Length: 450
Image 1 (cartoon, rainbow, N blue to C red):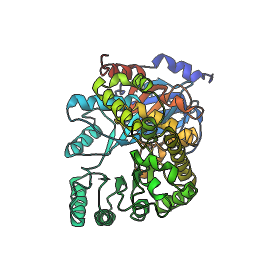
Image 2 (cartoon, one colour):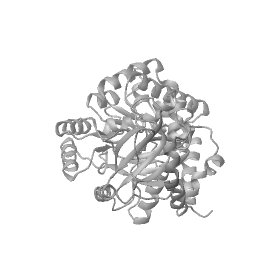
Image 3 (cartoon, rainbow, N blue to C red):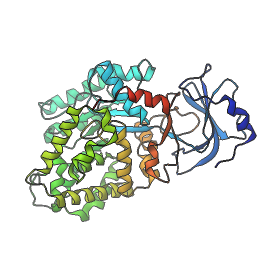
Image 4 (cartoon, rainbow, N blue to C red):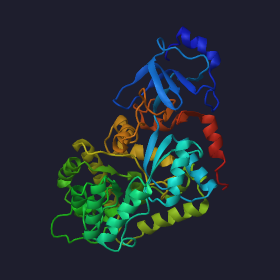
């Protein structure tokens, strides 16, 4: 038990547990253990002062005075870290209630930034509403409508669409399957010329190596890597690969994984593995267990039925075998670890809400999957905090003076056990404090009767 100082005892009468922003915009975490995420450090017994949405002071609880009018949060035996990011999210629906449900699920699970991977014009306004506080929700990084084999008609059309989406104000270009080699090359050249990031899937016609040479900002789902690891002579597409090529697992040359990981690092391309998406669809987890997950209480029966049908269809595919699926999972985990070891950037994302990935809840399952792949808890958490800040060039992702106050207060140390990442005592979003009790009430509103 961390000892109380005389100062903390004197302040204890003023500790407030409700959601609020103090009258003068000052909120203070007292006697808290800080996980800055700039390094694998635990700064014990700290006072952290937040003013008007930014961290203004961090220091020893014995040396940092607390303003008398501040809202004080007791951090004793708790751990303060940056809020998490979901770097492969989908903003589903457009109604006020649909948006409220989605963002509540994210924020209640400590997700304070989302990257929307299939955007539309309404998301531009929504992004500003979130940022201004007009609408409750996390920070939104948004793409425009995807460039894919149906939406793009030529190389010139790809270039035109890239320029149009930048002019409209989208943050990046989303790439979906089906682009020809010339269309993807035009997309990449134009995006690099005007400094517009592009991310998502790797077109089969181009492949991972061309995506790397084209300076793709992020490859999502590890898409295209299994095809790139096929030995010469397997054909342009490697045959039928199934869901993200998992059925090619027995054919790939695994000895080349370090080589392609090094190439990825050299290119400066990041990866968003969404490993939990792939694993829970192809592994042996029973459908009964998937249905009974606690978070399915926030999903309609019809949607869960659709998820179940998708898993059953995959398991019943004539090319599917449990042995190949297990090998694919093992090789994907090895690829994640080798990418990390080579210094290629990894970003946290689960592809929510897709196939058993309930927004917010799935990000903690993805953290566990990264640890299962060989990352330490700190390294896994970094993919959703400091690494995201580096990738986006944002002022979040690290607990430090001058940083935006998107924070997560935990009841246990996640560096010791990654499962502690969801022992949430409260979330701070843009300087607004939301204790667990309020988050629970917000979630309750979206429980689906069974």
